[in-house]
Amino acid sequence: MRDTKHFSIDEITWNDLDMDAVYDRLNICHSSVGAEILKQTLTDLLFDEEILLNRSEKADYLSQNKKQEEQLTKVFSALGKTKKVSFLDYIFRLKEIKPAGNGIHILLIILLLLSIAAIFVKPAVGIVALVVMVALNIILYFRYKAPIEPYFNCVKYLVSMIVAAEKTAKILNQNATAFTDDAATLKSLVRTFSPVRRGSWLITNSVSGSLADVIMDYVRMLFHVDLIKFHSMHKFCMEHEEEIRKLYEILGGIETSICIAHFRDSLDYYCLPVFQSPDSAFHTEDAYHPLVKNPVANSIRTQKSVLLTGSNASGKSTFLKMIAINQIFSQTIYTALARTFETTFYQVLSSMALKDNILGEESYFVVEIKSMKRIFDALSMDDPSMIFVDEVLRGTNTRERIAASSQILKKLSHENARCFAATHDIELTKLLENDMENYHFTEHISEETGDVLFDYQIRPGCAVSSNAIKLLKAYGFPSDVVDAASEMAQKNTQK
Image (cartoon, rainbow, N blue to C red; front, top):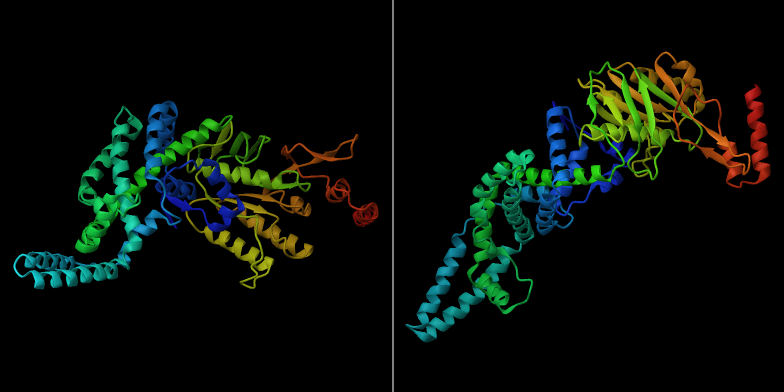
């Protein structure tokens, strides 16, 4: 989904960029709300620098105030996580429950109490009535509880969130100026949810097995107190959906700020992005990938789209992902892994790590065409797009691939977009030299060992070497295979 201030990364782009691993790199959340909001934060690209700056200031505050950060971490650790189900999905599934009154339960309680009173008037009748009412109350208790019991954990977690909100507000009142509004809102929400919190212990099942817990279980079965409390809580939740969402977003946002602070502290260096007009040059200095161990930093300044060529395994795909992830970081956590990162607000889309759809009976080429079509559909939107393509149309023959991919990349370079594309088709560098700037990666052969070595540094211009056959030799393929391949390649070059 997308509105005037958000663009949600789609599933293809998320998978292309290994964003699950990127998310894991940032995720130190102890609560479900924190983990869910962090995921949402990395998914939704913002187009409002004021919101991003506020998010950055919160992370900076926590980074500089470790005591409060530790206190907040304890609160979120106590809040904990729900089991496999998103809290937000779970809480709004309460709508599936038909509103139910407590009349039947109150009637059963009254009848039970009357049967007890009858013992003192007519003992024989009273005892029979009591046995009947005890049995009836227990049977009806389990009948009424069965369809709503799965939602008990949901409202229990909501109560835990209210407790966490109260503690969080107190911690943030300790001169946490970046969180002033959040603290005030949490205090207000705690007051709003006081009816939910009051008596919430009635729906808590026994876990310790103590005598008091066992007695309380029988009290629930006989007097239906947990069902009565749940129905009142259910009604309250349905009337305060917006407040629940706000509580969820603020608590999750605060723990997300902790994640951003820790992530920044773990980096060798980072910078705040600089957002410019769409017609400005894209420029980054010493940018690096968050998932690569001992990454090689790269710099680039370009006014146009970029076409990357180079040897296999030389770093083209990693470079594309590095730029894309830093763009996403810039519009989500206001952080770029670089010395300088000058860009604009973009929609980010990619077509890189596609697979054929066997279950859907779609070939790789069909999957690739559909992936590219969704990118073209995005070009009609108002905001500019940053597009990443690795080996466009690799699923078809060389002649048609070069013809079609040249026109696709040309279109993407002139339609309110900045495209970064990687290719092995050197012909494209000539066909698109007026539309895209050429950069390349290369390798060299060790004179001592004969190994193929890479420095992973981007260079201007197009590649002048290839290494597929060299890699066959380096990885120990039979010499007759390597020699025959070299001879055939040389003949084809001479034609």
